[in-house]
Length: 362
Image (cartoon, rainbow, N blue to C red; front, top):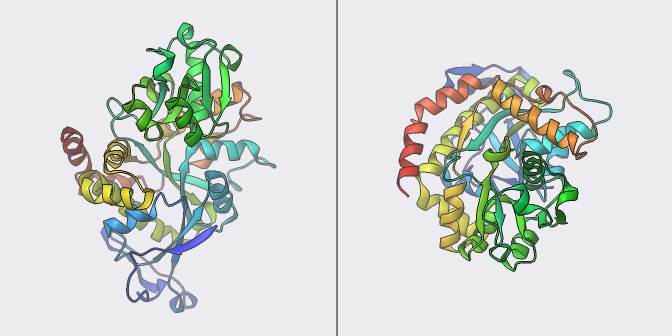
């Protein structure tokens, strides 16, 4: 784990004490005890690679936050989730499928009292019709033009067990009434799978379309979207339960959630700056940055029964295929306390109107 202090917090970090941790955008304040007055509150935010910090810094949205942010950078979602569960991180961003797998692997089982972290906001795909990020792609050489049982039976299908692309692979098989025995499973991570697809070494891959931009440009075909076969596994902000139970951190996280909605609105409405951050950090060509930006716009959503039902569906499919070892109560790992905050931020930013304009601009 690598801890990085966010570059948005320039100058003097001493905003005062937690005694007056003002969340002015939300019309609330938190009063802490005298011992907190000598300290500035810090939120540690977990990220997989540098997926959050460049955009957050470029937006400038956190520059006046009444707390300090430190980014904890992890090589993968598993290490990210492990640190969050251990309390070394306050808030992380990773896929909900990751949390479901962690819950299924837990011993003893999580309970309402012991669940180590909870999803607090979901980053849903902004446009499931024309810009669904998670897809199944057929290589140009395969000749496959649609997702049917006859078309994929016996074909080489790449995925990475444990990753979100593996979930989409399993959901697709269930949708078709098939099992892994009906295809030729190939275990490859996203990068290797993308190369294999490009060179015709596999017939099918499932995963984030931004991994397959070059292959799609070269004639590979998107034959199904995540929503065609089941609920996807969007990422989202997930908070440590201990941090949620701390009044000062709870208030800071509430402010962070509000700013997160503002950030996603900025990302959707400032394509030039957002793409520049992608080019700089991910070393992309401008063309690939255009492609990735168009598919990574999201609509922040509060936790409600629909989100929990999606998690239940994911858990059921993966249990049926043996990808997780036991059935779990996924509702334990969700917390709707910030629903009003998210709703208010969406309204204040005119998020949906701005998103429609963003989508219409292409």
